[in-house]
Amino acid sequence: MTPAQSRAARGLVTMTQTELAKAAGLGQSTVIDFEKERRVVSDAAIAAIRSALEAAGVEFIEQNGGGPGVRLAKRQ
Image (cartoon, rainbow, N blue to C red; front, top):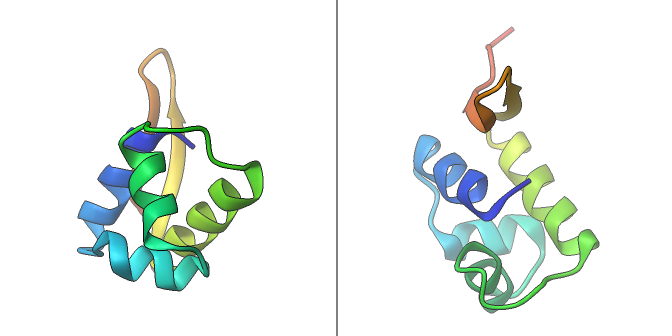
């Protein structure tokens, strides 16, 4: 997951950085630093961010030739 995907995913589900940090069990500064590419955050932190966004209904995708993206997951 890229920082841009995280920002876009939050936008899809109208989630603030504070809300994402809480859902991921991380400090707000970790989410901010990741999304602004201020520092390298751990793989575990990135996985926690991704899991929290997926739980909120985001699906991470790789587009053919278009690079990484996000979309709302289909409701079942």
